[in-house]
Length: 386
Image (cartoon, rainbow, N blue to C red):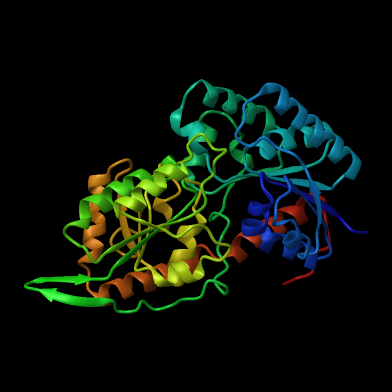
């Protein structure tokens, strides 16, 4: 007998980039896996993992109650037809509406709260609605995973989920075999008096949203430009035009024209860009556990990120990078200057410590095994040993 697992996310891109390891592990162990998400150019790659893909239209950023009710109904129809043995929910709308539909059909649910996003950051009327929706959606879940203790404690303290149901995962993990350690290249170029200046490259990898701290990164670069003219400040990531926090193409072009930053576009494989950087920066306002920082740590690059939930877990301050204050471009610029002034050997050591941390705490295999164990326990599948 083949057990059937349905995985729901908000984009096929997200499925492929963050859950490919789990999908492959389930398929290898004899599960029938069905992936559900809005259709995009990553569908063919998902199918090559050995699973079926069912497209499901989803207004990810919208709050129209009619569209959300239609999404709930579509989840219900789809799950009633497929009758999976378990439903795995990720991202807000699959976690809420997919879970509600699954529970109405007595299908066990495992949720993953990968981050609270701008709704929880702003803490307004919409946040109260989302909180109540989560409370109902998670009521009968078998397990609810979180990616940092702050999010877990918030949900438990506000009684959005029962304490006995929660678990903690190291983000989505990172494939440490794919993201191999690469030692920094010495880019020291000139010495003037006591100050050593290098062609130092900072790299911010993220969707270009204001709440990723892109504005603070640009302002910090503006402050450092005159003192360190050889330093480079690079942006890598796509402009999410559907997101209300999106930074416009026009704004990005104005920064490039001003000579503050270089925009590298977007890519399917960021390994080269991280390896070419001296330091990876993410001044985000709040995260689950950002994959880009895990990838930077695995490759062996020092990190600068904000002292906020999800980000602080990846950096031991002064060991594999620096923590800065949130929404504070002055403090971010100070930490970036500290990084510039490190010796090459000190930067290498930070990178080595980051790699060690990635291997010990954030290996993707930790995440996959947690899922295999809970699925086996819940539906009694006969899973082969690794």
